[in-house]
Length: 279
Image (cartoon, rainbow, N blue to C red; front, side, top):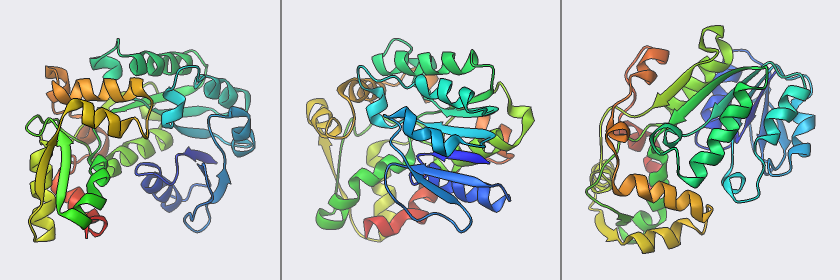
């Protein structure tokens, strides 16, 4: 059995589907009750309370670990989840980490994630690290304003990074869970091109067939919006990257193609599959 945490999210949902289609027994873990594919077991558990994950891990051979935003907050102990998995007899863990662990190692949220990576390396279990950069699905934060006002509001409108499609992250994670050759692998995942927020708004407008106006936020305005959903440290680390990405953060990684045998999907492809959210 393979346990997928964050199973109803932008990465967890396609990952759960892919594993089920591969004939694996899957336990989908999410904070709240949710619909899952036929044949998939669902467990409601909050990873901020590690003991609640124990039932889900009973009999598991592998775990996909996605840390929710509150597990990046001061005082959280996400590395405890690694010990819990090892104690349950899990043999392989694939951790959804962050590109920033390598490119911005001194950021507070990156230091915390590095500690989780180190705990996994030292756990005695097989492991693989998946380190995506910016997610294409972050554009869903604009869905309501596009629907109601025809507007995208974001900071640093003309500064781009190579955002990655969550479906590609899920594909790489599935391979790491299913194939022994990925044990000990560290995969940096990006999209195929650098794209700015303004260009993303233009792609959404093109898919809708109607205008979308771009409104540039100040850093303070963006931070205030982000901290409604994530800890301040994570918001600050993210804003540092998207304000002034360094050369490593602008690099187009070959790792999606190395693992999946095809180029990563562009932002336009993600928009086409998710355009209903913006209508």
